[in-house]
Image (cartoon, rainbow, N blue to C red; front, side):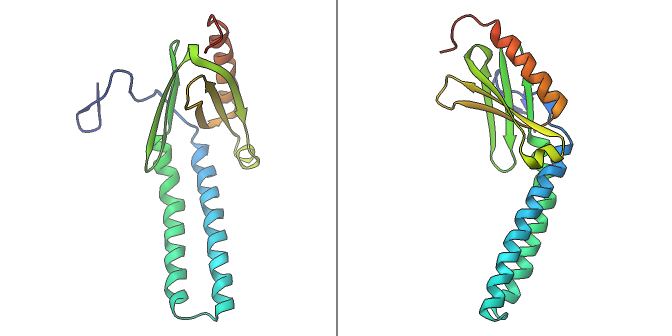
Amino acid sequence: MTHGAGVPMLPGLRDPANQVSRRAIGYWTARAAVGGLVFIGAEIGVAVLAGFGGWQAVALPLTALVAVGYAVIMPRWRYRVHRWEVTDEAVYTRAGWISVHWRIAPINRIQTIDSHRSFGERLFGLANVTATTASAEGHVHIHGLDRATADRLLDELTIATGHTPGDAT
């Protein structure tokens, strides 16, 4: 198996089969835009108090350009990277956008399964699933799932871990 331009991958390190919900792009864009607006607002506040001029005349448009670029590029890039899969043996995740983080957690090591839906995620119909393992890393997060997929995944993981003998430690 290869990844990208013919770079061989380790046997257990492969592209997980499933992408997150396309609605995650909208959610990540909205979060980035709100964060950018807060930062620009603070910068405007400082500029007003300091008597707008000099460095503010350069910094404010530059900050706006970076904020817009981040809100446009990051969500789409992140969507291409974020993937997940559950097999009979393990939960696979890949997340990030600049730094990419891979996690593979054996099903027999999962101790708890959780779902979280922030206010913003609920507005976009999204949910997260977290499987806590017995490892030092502790958690395998799958962010940006649509609610139905998250609910189905919770059921599947509950059944899969229920078939595992022992206490997963």
